[in-house]
Image (cartoon, rainbow, N blue to C red; front, side, top):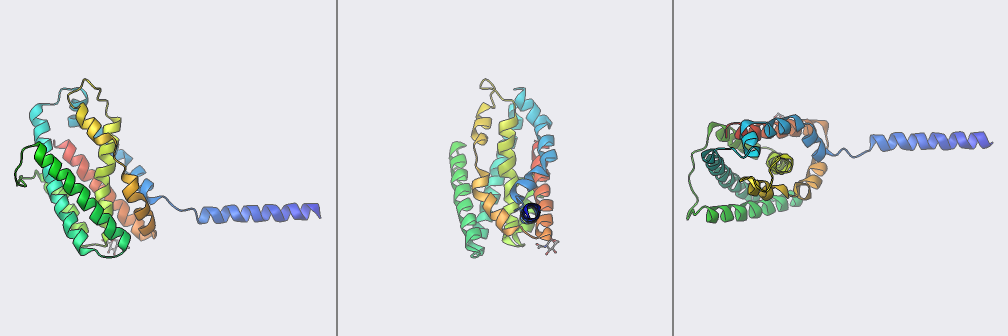
Length: 224
Ligand SMILES: *[C@@H]1O[C@H](CO)[C@@H](O)[C@H](O)[C@H]1NC(C)=O
């Protein structure tokens, strides 16, 4: 009798374990990033990042990079504005787009003020930026969750680069590190991605898009 009970207990435990494996919620948010770590690592090693860490990056290169970054912000803020008006449901994605638009817009205002722009500047994008912006625009026509995915590489990569770059206080680019170290992308993106990316096809599309945007980020740094 005792052995039968133990056998039954073992059977139930085993069954529960298999069930828990089958229903274990996949953390898509984290997987997208982990599967693109090779690109993150490559970006940390491009000449621009290396010169930054050696404190020998030419000032002009940093100015060019900053101007391209301002243009990135102008363009993406504008796309967020369009998307936040276009997407009314689901409510959580709509709320996300409105919140990201407000956040990007206020950051852009701060930067324009800091660099003495009285009006939004027209900046000629580099070929790498033209390609990056075209990728963004393509995602605007798809299911809105993909636009959310497309925004994430920038948020995660800059934070990771800032935390992993060896830039001490005495380095002239220390403010770049400090300004980018403390974002909280998981707060805005994690729940949404894990909720809306569930089928293998959605996850595979999201993975391809995430990698493409990571590559676009890499190319921006590599050509800066
Ligand atoms: C995945 O991407 C393909 C090719 O762009 C598209 O046709 C398909 O509708 C997408 N599937 C989902 C679930 O988004």
